[in-house]
Image (cartoon, rainbow, N blue to C red):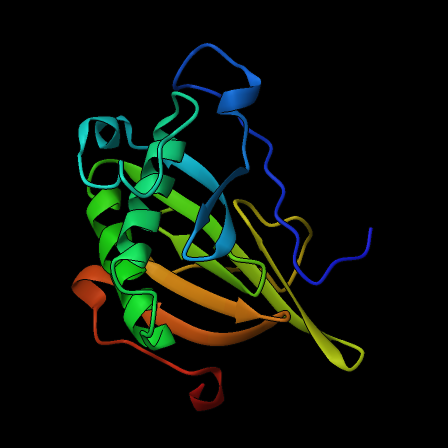
Length: 183
């Protein structure tokens, strides 16, 4: 398979206990003229009762993951048009922190151009050059030995074409914006 960006998810379903195609990751919804894809690792069932994103994104299934996805899209829609990348990414970071406070919330989110990865308590990355382009991998657990590094708690990493373009430490660690060139 050849792709500039690929999201895959192997799910151990706990909520809802009934499997089905509507409850299968990755989820996909349109927002702001783009198609967004989302996969989540964790458990945040309290997000299902939260209100605020129903006008932008209506979950098709019953998972806490898809409800959380719709909340993130609701935040994006509130400021995406005409906003700088930093503004809508900041809104995602704030909402990710709020949802993570409800349980465990590690996720991958993409609009086809950017890969946004949020590590709440269990996410790892491997960044390395691959020819002229860069290759970055994000997974719950390291997929091989050597080179994998854990996300800091509340770390948001933004990739474009396999290259890290922004790293943001969210929540209590806020203020930690780091561009890859500053590392």
